[in-house]
Amino acid sequence: MNKYKASQIHLVKRPEGLPDKSHFRKVEIELAPPAPGEILVKNHYMSVDPYMRGRMRSEGVYAEPYALNQPMYGGAVGEIVESNDNELHVGDLVLNNAAWQDSFVARADTVSKLEPFDISRLSLYLGTLGMPGMTAYVGLFRFGEPKKGETVFVSAASGAVGANVCQIAKQMGCKVVGSVGSDEKAQWLKNNCGVDEVINYKTCGDLSNALAKAAPNGIDIYFENVGGEHLQAALNVMNHFGRVVACGMIGTYNNTNPEPGPNNLMLIVGKKVRINGFIVFDHNDMRQEFLSAMEAWIKSGELVVRETIVEGIDNAVDAFLSLFSGKNFGKMIVKL
Image (tube, rainbow, N blue to C red):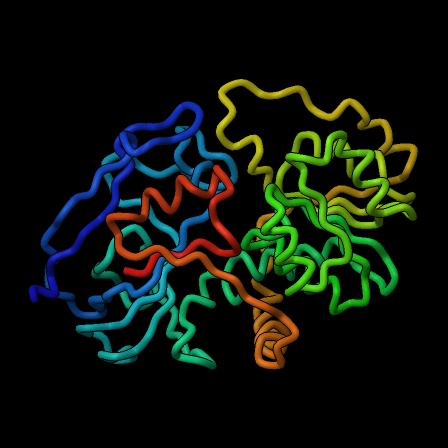
């Protein structure tokens, strides 16, 4: 087997609205052997995430846009198969930002050596112990400031971020209400994650009424993953001095024309609501705290992990596209 042969997925045109397979192309390349200070890495797992849709726009959203006819990138876990560096060696596992390719050559200082607590669960470092899990942890503690007895509402509650928010909030002694798009996801959250009330937003009718029924004493924290009517409902049911933690709005990512916003924003003033948008990469000072807490909860069984794992780089685009139809359960991972 030629270790210098690599498959990459390129973005070849920018989507307007929902992307499809025509926007991507698989490319086969031959890698050069690593120069001094470089390493050759074989990726084992890569992450596909909703935020990548924003990078497909020409102007980007909150991150630099992907270049056309170049490999896209994102979180991945790989193994060094050849090293021309003094610090990293063959067999070392590394976190890297070279998703969308099964092998790559890079400077050694662009990856991070990984020492997993369980080598059989490397994909955790792209989900619960990676960017989505840290988004949940940072958002809830730094901006949500949960207190025992408060009520937390989480949209996209069975997703990679949302499921972690739900379970962390339960660890803090909060009541948790989640919103999902299927009864199967609702049952999993209640039975496996201890979520108190779950709303199927596709079948509940008026979302504000459903949320008020699920949280009769109001909500104190809304963890925003969706936007649109979810934000409107959250503000309607929000208690005074409530907090909105906004890390994404997947419901708007593929809109060609902006949808009308919530029409109740004056409630922010009257209820003295605080809204914080954030990007998790700005908060690396919390990384060790996050890893220590989350690893402990996983080891003790207090935090349940669910992943959807798709096999092969040939199926990576399908895995990404499925994020926007709600087909994934928990974190979407591609095994390479």
